[in-house]
Length: 509
Ligand SMILES: [Ca+2]
Image (cartoon, rainbow, N blue to C red):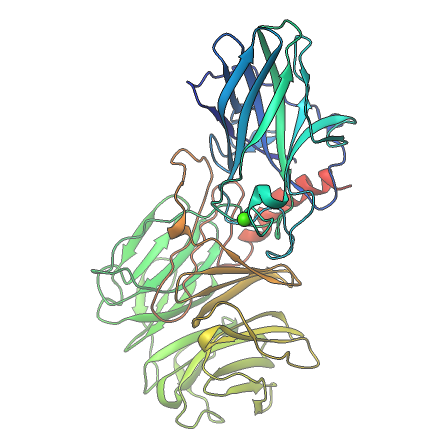
């Protein structure tokens, strides 16, 4: 299934909607330049007398579940092309200054967030102007969806000193010139294409309105079984536990008297919440207390299955459940050290830590020389792909053989790490920043709180993030019903990728 993103071009004058949609046929999708994502498709109409160029999404929104191409977003979702100073010379020429605005969470014209792609952002003519009109000053022609398509290129200084169009950044304008050849109106279709660090990943983050837990919204943890079954936990109160069912949040006060610091489940009807004074379990219907020997506040929980669950926390607390009560781990290596994170790839490959990192190999615990202290988050995809994040943005990675030298991802404490694969990893920190690892480099996603424009009519923006200044993970990604976002839980992001990747492979055969 292809996925095309639609947007709108605003003219300086009034908007004139084009009712015609002109989707290319399946067979017309040909190679776009390698490593470039198609971000927008626009149908444009120029009215010479009115000195107006206006564009609308080229394709109408389709009902979800439609067998046809999935069109996501709406006006101004991923980009805005704006034209000003539209000038006509009789029926000889029409010119206008056009800018490109990046409304996505990712930087454009770069594969790694720092190195600019020389091709910048290209706006190419999928359908040439009608009525004999020609593009007079294209920057070049190329094969995008067909051969010999003229394009305007925004690159280098057009994108600022860095040659990259950052999230939220407006390009400088380029003067587009059309030879009218006597025409008084004409239409055309353009696409916006550029390189993204994570073409298969989240394009847009928008806040998700959870219930307020207090004067400030403290979200400590997130875990989900699916896109329509996600839990978050926070501070003590009537909203300490909240559930997303795919369309709305519901608060549960099952552990109202306690802050809940961490969540983990083996399935939708087996979810644990642990915190300052309580351990609770969701059985699919209600939350109830679970017996535990934990002497200190719990900060982290993880299990390899419903019958193998670890929780750890303050002053050396480490407990285990085989499906019932939590009891002390006899071989607890923590001493009196706090434990802020747990993750494992199996029952015989478990990491815990805070001051130090310890590893359980199924038989015994050992101290890990990972080169990091102040551990805040541990996550991986396998026994040979493990990330540990700590204070001050320090991050180390285990490749199965050795630990990498610490790198800095952001400059503040890591809050949480989660991903779907070795090349799709998200990190959030206590400043609310979101970072993404694409298999080779970490790139910061724009902080959603910084987004100036979040279209309200976005159809499936899904969403996402609750930056938290509190402990633990802070990433909340609520996938929309269809595709597009992420997640904090298992599987959902994979669905998002399944929807996106074929679209990209169609462009990058
Ligand atoms: Ca820039």
